Image (tube, one colour):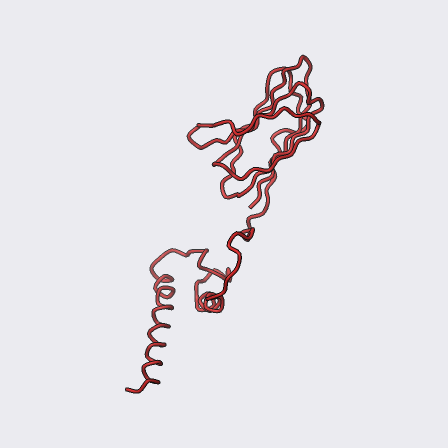
Length: 172
């Protein structure tokens, strides 16, 4: 057997080993959307070809990437809500599947207010992430997602009601 025949045999074996998991996967296992590179609903040779073309390339693994069909989401737990003396607490807001959460709060009179940001889990446990004493009407801060949910509390230690708006943006 000559060298050319050995190289051809090695190529055939490599192609069979590379393609066979995809062929077997189509008939015996569930569809995996992460393996469907071109998002056509099938895992086939086109997905393998794309991966083969990218083989050996390099880049920045820390680059911010937005997952397709997973866009920024807005929650508005309070819009011009009057907060009497005491406190208001949002319900838990799910952050599953997101990388960043931005909290925007507007207060008609921040002088007697405190803002509490909590991280929560589905078991009901929560812990205080930050306590804020706002000095202006508007406050904005972005956090890395810490857990499954967040909760926001606004405390009003004054004698008069305060109007508040709260927006929460979730970013992939």
